Image (cartoon, rainbow, N blue to C red):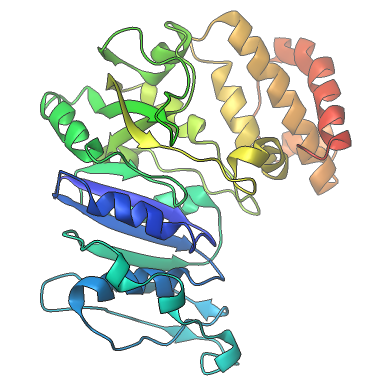
Length: 363
């Protein structure tokens, strides 16, 4: 299998049919859809089950998983002779028979109105830990050579996976490449950000941003083996880790083949991570500090960008002290991410931004 389309999701049952429909319309068919549910309490599992019912013609209902589910729930068609494989480990107080907590999935998404799929769907349920932990699980479970992250509130243009496959064909045997990267666009077809200065570019993500000044979100499609080499750090009591941390680390060893074509359509939700990015960093300060500390050490990052990174490092370091009732001395002994001593010049501006964040509640 060439591509794993991976969706980390949390309480987005109402949006999944839109993404599913865009996958059904793909001109390229050699892919799977892997969904990792990061502890949803809505009807996510029922909606995904309904996608499979649309093809399998099986009207047998699975019991609705209660909110106190422990362990991992998998739904998928591993081969043509199987429909759903479910392994459930329930706590005491199982309320799966409580009629008030059961949902009729036909009210959410009618199988007759959904296009037929030609790809396997696999679903994994895990305890809530943040998008980055869901990605780590997805990478371990992925069967595709490439790993395409598609958030539950977004869609793919009909030729997206075909474009990825064609572009990957030219670099798949070159071990200096981590994968390929296209552009993000809005639902009305506009490119998000600046686009690329050339139609095809073979560069690292740091070089694309820092040397060529490319702005805006892009859609990186990494080799699954590369993501296994660079897992997201999972920090106790933190539920957010910037993707930039990992993409930058990958850029120190690999490049990507960039192509100037929209392969991903993004819609930012009011309650999503993107809309509350500062608050997310405030609540996960170690991951934020790690990201900015490493930025100050990259040789191909201009001084002005290193200064901004140092300011942001201090901005979120004060969050760590405040959230955990620790002093600066305590944080040193706890070995949190550090930066070179001379970046103390950025501390006053970092503290000013920290105060602004607090007064504005991180919005």
